[in-house]
Image (cartoon, rainbow, N blue to C red):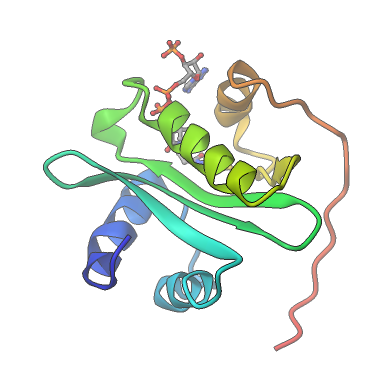
Length: 130
Ligand SMILES: CC(C)(COP(=O)(O)OP(=O)(O)OC[C@H]1O[C@@H](n2cnc3c(N)ncnc32)[C@H](O)[C@@H]1OP(=O)(O)O)[C@@H](O)C(=O)NCCC(=O)NCCS
């Protein structure tokens, strides 16, 4: 994505339901684009219709904010965005990618399974430190 894309990216996040009121999207986007360890990729037709945030922490690759405009689902954009994220990580020498799914988001598990991901039954714990 480019600097001028913020509003369009946030619009896709809102339409796709990946935004949460306690996360500031502009802050999330700026921080992901600040350092070379992470970035935000966009899928573009006549406008932005898909997004994924991808990064690596020195050990594993992670993706966040995979989102496809609800009007453009089941056309392969989700698969293409994940392939782009995997490619971005592979180029940096990262060999494992993991991601978090909210418990209630059952449908998306089928999507990731279709792409070769498996549930590794891990509990994620979190603390806000800043
Ligand atoms: C999940 C999401 C990104 C998938 O995007 P998409 O562009 O519709 O996915 P694709 O068209 O690339 O689908 C690839 C394959 O995944 C599977 N799949 C996709 N959506 C699915 C669903 N709702 N239920 C079951 N399988 C699904 C299918 O096997 C599909 O292949 P097919 O269409 O040939 O059957 C999209 O539904 C989305 O934005 N969801 C809301 C946001 C979200 O939950 N993000 C992930 C947070 S962890």
